[in-house]
Image (cartoon, rainbow, N blue to C red; front, side):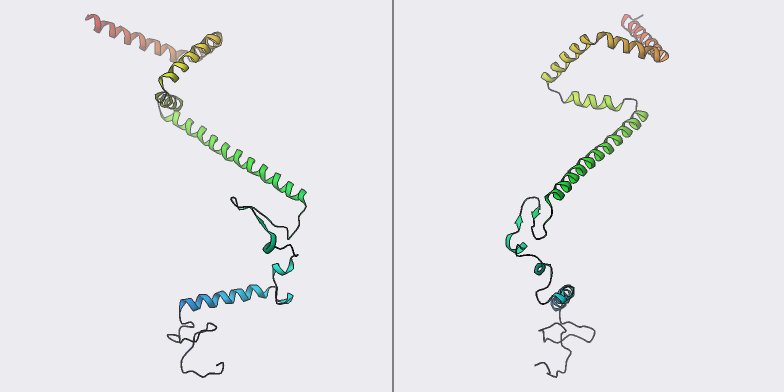
Length: 204
């Protein structure tokens, strides 16, 4: 009964007549608390459209072609087509083209960031190591080659050297004169090394 007089504090959740544990509590259990909060939120959201009548909300303002009746849902990637709010197909086409261009630009930017970071890493690596990064990676790649691949690489290298013999010689000559002292030191070290080796072999 609505006017019933009780000698205990009753749960504030609608349709629940259980007593509460103490005056510090308003609901008898967490279940009633969640139920009451849900009902309260539903009333708050419905109140935004209360002036439109009992069947208020966005669903009541659309045409008969409603989401509830003939929505086309494309499963797999979450895309869907809704005809409640008609939009010019040209606008859709422009939006789609802009999105595709945005994806391409984003991918290009991310790839550029990765490449720039790799270039900085290689530069710093070569600065602090005697063996260059390219040489290390080349050796790792060659270690994983099969015998057929090694033969194929050797044949291609010989063909390339035969076709570009003059260009390779010109490049080597330019590098030699650009670092003359470096190559002279290499030649001296090579000469003394072989000289000492010959003495050891001959026993003199």
